[in-house]
Image (cartoon, rainbow, N blue to C red; front, side, top):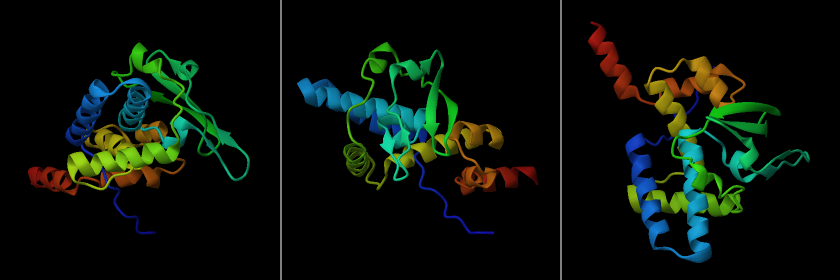
Length: 187
């Protein structure tokens, strides 16, 4: 068995700090800067509360010529989001975050680039949490949060779009302190 590193995760409390910092930035910004900050905020919500990959939000063209389309309003179907041509060349459904309202949806499609989004998240993580994070850290937070709430592993696998259950299994180990406390309570 290959030894996998535990992912860097973000707790719900840490995400709320990032979200509040972004909301303050949006409140004081004007014009194009305000729109860009709103796009960052929507992307953050989709990463942490829907487990979406950065490429599923802003789009991506693979070296083999296949593409992942940029998220559009049409992909939001009631309480869910349909991700088209995701990693592994198959569609999947994820939950629409409760805070993604009509105003947030009106921002779609997001026009910011992958690098700009990645740079923003990393900078915000340093400033607000004094922690190095990437956009993928938000996604790991989603998986870890679900595992911590007792969501069955196969359901987390489906929501995250993992083809292998052992990939999803890393979220069972993301909170060793919680596992230790639960084990101690059993004896």
